[in-house]
Length: 154
Image 1 (cartoon, rainbow, N blue to C red):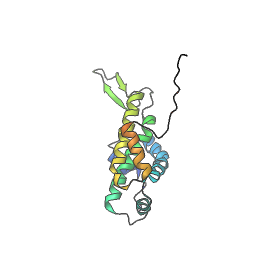
Image 2: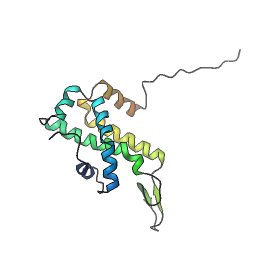
Image 3: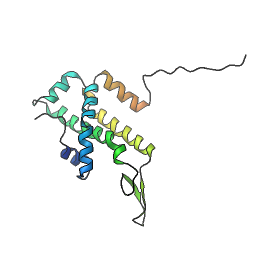
Image 4: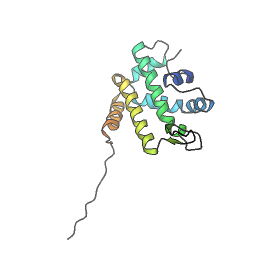
C-alpha cells in the first residue's frame, strides 16, 4: 500500500481531531492539493519511492506527519468559518454561551507554523524549491523582487 495519501482516519488521529463528516469531506477534497505541494518540494527519487509499496521507513513516517500538518494548514481557514457555534475555539468564558474563535491573523500564523513544521520534518528529502520555500517561511522573504521608486524634490 502506498504511503501517500494518508487515510483520513489516520490523519484525524495524528492531528487529534474528532471524526466529523464535514472534516472528513474537507480533508478528502484538499488531499490532492497537499500531494501536489509535497511533490513540488520533494526530491524526485524520494517521491517515487514513497508512491511505491517499497517506501523506506524514515521517509514514509516523515512524509506521513508532513502530509497531515499540511492537510490541516490547507483546511484551517475552512474549519474556522465564523458561524454561530462553529470554528476553532480559542477561549471560552465562564458562561458557556461565550466563545472566541481564532482571528484571521492567528489563522495565518498557525498555517505558517504548520507549514514550517511539515517542511522541517522532511528537510533531508527537499529539493531546491522546497529549501527555498522553507527559507521564505522562516525568514519572511520571497523570491519576488519589488521595484521601489523614490521620489525626490528638484
